[in-house]
Image (spheres, rainbow, N blue to C red):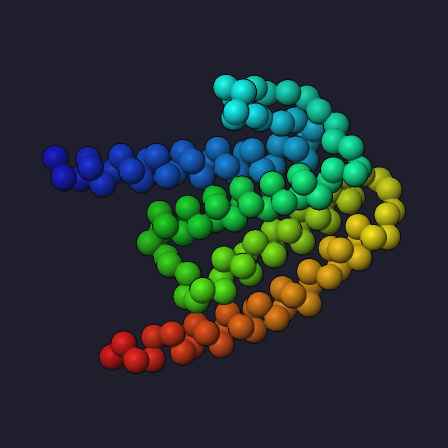
Length: 139
């Protein structure tokens, strides 16, 4: 009986990770799933002015799916900076993808994506430093 109690939450988290990943990636292909409207599946073409909303949404959903999969693999973040690092990296990924899909060159959008690279590098350095020192006093 006990293994079933542990199995059901893992299945729920796994299904949630799959759903979050699909919802994050579908806008890149011109489709959208709206959970608030009872899982409405619609074809859409986002306006260039609102790309940042889709970048933030996709990055957030992929970050949640990433940490959900890490939970299923029993891997915990080694530092408190890790969620920020993962989020910024997904913002960079989806920012570049949405800009490439828009087929337009808007300098301020590319500068906004470019600004995230030094932030990502800095967070990476902070994550490495913190993950080396977080468990030193545990033994």
